Image 1 (tube, rainbow, N blue to C red):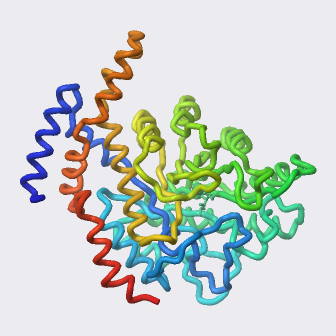
Image 2 (cartoon, protein in one colour):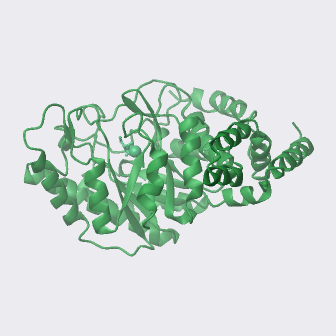
Image 3 (cartoon, rainbow, N blue to C red):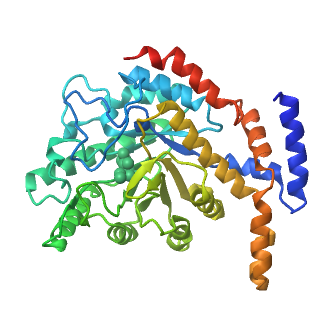
Length: 421
Ligand code: RNT
Ligand code: ZN
């Protein structure tokens, strides 16, 4: 489709949407406010660049698949990221895990320093990207038992406390240097495979570790902390120390954020419903956009009912600055660059869709007790021409339209990825 046709279709769509009082131009403008923190770890199956071999197995996270073309070094990972970013409309952020530092030899995790991330900082400046950060409390011999910050052994706990402290320092460094607050998210694998004998013990220890970690305070212009819960994981089927209730109450007391990962709740629980429940009283929230499938989380995000419902709630948050969106999945069974693009575009599209819904009709019907009308408008919205508005958004951001980007990925695969081995 040529540019003129995209514009023509957009104008037609705008008129159709206007019939329900929706202003497409305004929706497009609002969409600019939402930035995604794009996760570096989809690029290389969560391997990172530690010199010592960091085996994922036994850490609670597993990446399956063996698709060719995985980047072999930091330059190749950045090259892939640049490709992905060129196919995603809008200005976004990059989310780094601490094992992606540039280490000149083996460096222990409790000795990570801002200097190990200079390269990323410089690269981020060149590409006008802001950075977020994550401690890596897994894929390490000291996490082999499945316990880190809640480990009964003082030495192991101390090691991980020091690691997280080091990571918060690095995040604050990013925030300062890039003049944009960096979010440090903490997820730990801690839990038990089978029936716990003492649930209080590990939670008390985790509490103590967190208290120690957060002793160091940073300005909110540099760093904001978030805490990510989980329901169960590989090796933590029976008990997870950092459960939702644990972190929610802790965060509330300490003025921190929680992170809700879409794959970390019971399959019939609605994360969409939790946003207003957590945020009505104020505060901020981080979302990990992922897709759970049966017992596993971390599948590539798709534009499905769940994401649509979630986006409706995201755009309903009065101030977009209070809600932070980060991708979190890893799939090594397909073109990894394409997986980034597919998930990121799905999220942005779902936000646009949410901004174009006939909200006035939906809300009025509900308030009037017109139950049929409420459902009618929801069904009516199904066939609204969202795609034409999305294509126009892509055009104005100089990225391929929806029916063009896959081809670009295939070209890149042939020209670049297939040559790696
Ligand atoms: C794990 C959590 C966590 C990780 C990343 C790599 O279940 O979702 O966010 O996916 O830290
Ligand atoms: Zn997550």
